[in-house]
Amino acid sequence: MPNSGTVRALAVCVVIAWAAIEAVQPEPAKNDYSDKRNWLCWPGRAADACAADETTTVVAADGTLSREEFARNADAPVDCFYVYPTISTERTGNADMTLGYEEKAVVAQQFARFGSVCRTYAPLYRQTTLSALIAAMRGAPIPADQERAYSDVRDAWNYYLAHENRGRGVILVGHSQGTAILIQMIRSEIDGKPVQHRLISAILLGSRLAVPAGGVMGGDFKSIPLCRAPAQTQCAIVYASYRADAPPPAGSHLAAAPAANSVAACTNPAALAGGPGELQSYLPTHNSFRGFSAAPGSWVKGKEIDTPFVSVPGLLSAECVITNQGSYLAVTVHGDPNGPRTRNIGGEVVFDGKVQADWGLHLIDASLAMGNLIDIARAQSKTYLAQR
Image (tube, rainbow, N blue to C red; front, side, top):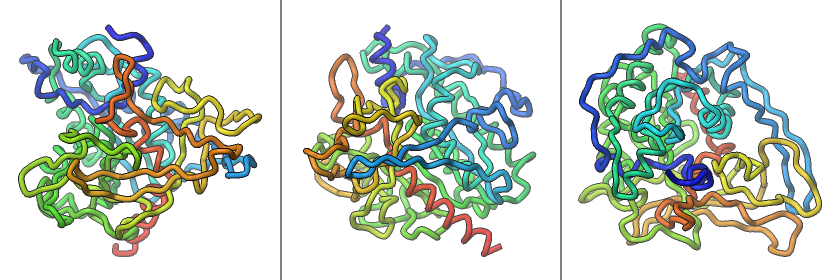
């Protein structure tokens, strides 16, 4: 088994080696999603992963610190449904249904903040584990069943639709393995079907979605285009992030064209219509955040930060780029290298002591644009509600 540092550094990796993981044949028993213990997030619960502390320290370019509180909207008129990334450190190929630190922590980073816009739903599921991913990457796969992970999420979605949705609009949110599952579920259960009219948008981060070169619809989805305006609905936001000065290598599994005559979709949440835009990031403060982001040792010289998240206005911008290596969100770090605020945002995947260029800034895909995504979700929700 890898050491704990390697496991932490791979905390939100895409399962790139699914094809190499051996499938388990016996049909597992279905989860009972009427049992709220099988949900990470469920509206109205006090002890809930989405009740995480989202308090943020805003670090200005001149080193000035201010505090930003977070408020959930208990009366949100729309819903959000989230599928978390590869995060389980269990030693089996598939996770069990035990809620652990890792699941809680990744919800705090990637999803809890959506509680200002929507009621939050996030099922536990028997995902393919980090152990299975690492074993496959090393060429010694262990038995795991990716269909079990998908079936769990589909069953949770169907339970939510039957018992909780009641005609409300819903935003789908996923990252990495969670995104791969949502893409499959959208294709099978939503795209072109009556339930699509309840879809406000799909935020699909850290995985590939095929679209025709130069187009916004077609490929993986037949009737759900890429979002090109903040108030547009029934559309998808998709990207994988890389440093602008460290683009993906040739053949990248996140950026390269998924199929002939297609490209990997990229929508810039800081400028949906195209071009560059400023990222409104909410980054985890400490390295002790179990590797979900390789945060710097200090965000500002001579000052300590006591909140779980930091915001760094003006430090980061992004633009969708298409090169011979693929299509991706290129992130540029600005700021004064001699100023008091750090320019080290971390976010790379480390495997066996080496930074994996293929993954880019995978560990902070969601954090980089969290503020932008929340603003878009709010605008889309207003449009959806006005249309009804």
